[in-house]
Amino acid sequence: MAFAQVQKQFPEAALLMVGDGILLATCKQLVKSLQLNHVQFTGVLTPEIIREQMAASFCLVQHSVQAANGDKEGTPVAVLEAGAAGLPVVATRHAGIPDVVIEGETGLLVDEGDVEAMAAAMIQLYADRALAAKMGVQARSRIQQHFTMEKHLSELKFFLKMQFRLKISFSMYV
Image (cartoon, rainbow, N blue to C red):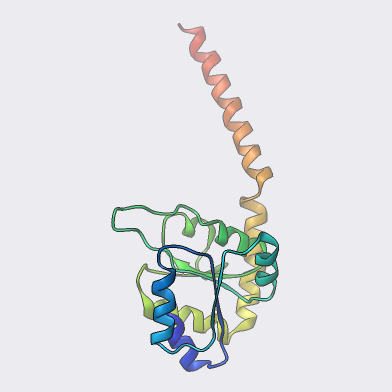
């Protein structure tokens, strides 16, 4: 529904929907009923094709919502991959997304279900490609500084070392 507003302002805008799931048929029906001309459903893609698609894109849009049963998806890998690829992210303030996407620096965040704000964020980045590019550079830098395997392994080693020291300290008093 947010992309419908984007397409009204920018008829040439295109949206690529990657993946599969229980809402796919609903999404396809919504695209048809809203008569959106430039939405393509790809289904599941290989990592190589996803990298190619990200290289050809100017941003990633991820509208995550909490399920009725309270389930949340954590930190979506797609958001991390987009940042690593130098793409700004338009997403919801959902679970771990705000830990990765710094609002106004590496992307734009909106509340879950806020179609108007999602549309406005998408329009802002579509209209201002220089801002999108700047946010993309900052997103790549953030991912490289905070979300690499080396960073996580280093933190894990530190944690394990501290845990070992605590065990030695406690065992001395037993």
